[in-house]
Image (cartoon, rainbow, N blue to C red; front, side, top):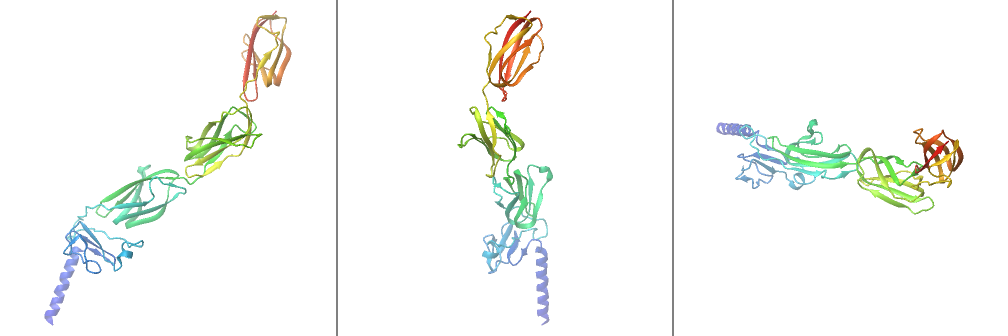
Length: 372
């Protein structure tokens, strides 16, 4: 009996010694076993070993073995339990693990466009690691922690509008790491149109301008029709600048007439916003001044000039004496003819007559005369 007791005590001391010498290297729970190089494993639930073992001894830097009774569901299924990792050698020294973890990024997929700021992350690693990410656009902010001692990370993270460029890093306890660079866009805001030109009731020449806020412009479309027609025509540009407080000009090359128009701004997600319809007039035709045939260059008049003329449309009519006042003087507004005598000082005069219509189109006529 005494010999049996001594044998049991000696055996327990031996097991305790072996366990103490290898506690830092060997790890096992109900699902996983992790064994460093040169250490003996216990095998899986059925006592079997993988090809990483030779006669039960780990032949690789780190041997990871599924030991669950139900490996398909506990180790490799959708609800797999976290995998273990080798940390230190069986002698209690520093880890001999030189094998980097394998980082898999299932989401976000690079070049994806998200329509909300909350972005789904789905990361996994081949061993227990520290997962973190860095904003490559602002590297000075440093890495942000996702999780420690984990083999997966599934959660939503909030990102800014526009292009996001991030680096995801997985680092194991031995310092080995794997990194992935991912780029994606966030476009959660619909475009906003603040103003269009020409404004309602005004004149235009065929150039139309829209003012907007949109970080990811895909296309801007101008839609228009004659006020007397229901037929809608459109023209578009896909090179307008993205950002806030931007503007873009489109030309429709329209003939004179009354029109309704509006703009549509579309972003890369497909969200569209339209401005309200505006009525305006296209007028690219210059007015025509016709002087009375009795007026000709070099004529001499007494005391005043008998100015007689007609205009092809209603205008603001002005004149300027190049030999006298350097600015234009108003003759009449909203008029299409003029028949009056204008007093001038004695001497030679060089006169410029200018007609300007409501759209800003102009015509000028000039002639010289003398006053005695």
